[in-house]
Image (cartoon, rainbow, N blue to C red; front, side, top):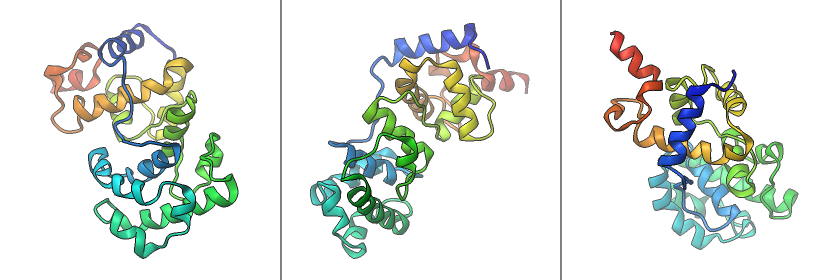
Length: 213
């Protein structure tokens, strides 16, 4: 997939409309961001932000969480989707951080993905935000917006990620993830997208297909 004039105009729109785009997850350390991103799987950032203050206060370091147990952590996580598995992931992740990575969140994608509860999307989020790696995390919002704007026709997150990396320069990949996810979260929603508020209608396949119906 080659970069074209539409891609340039789309990126220029985001540069103008969201020059300071960043994650909406609250965190105060790489470890706490890792905790928050693990909890955010299939859950809203708003719900995660309501839940993490008590977790962060109780467990300031990987060591403190690694020394805890299921019955202690679960009550702090139970309002999040899939609390049982996420509680186990947090405990196992923190133990591996302590034992294998000297309590430091790794910057390498493969090393991040070796941690329990960390898939490629989570690893890319951490690497991008904490270490400014030129990677793009693809979730449902990013995939939907990429499809509608013709940035990718990939059927998997990995395929969309590869397409976006071909179109977006390394220096902008970190912020581009936030552009796409925030646009998908607040404007280009899955159902009843707010097309009246969107400046990208000329490049949108959703608008085009709707007009042909």
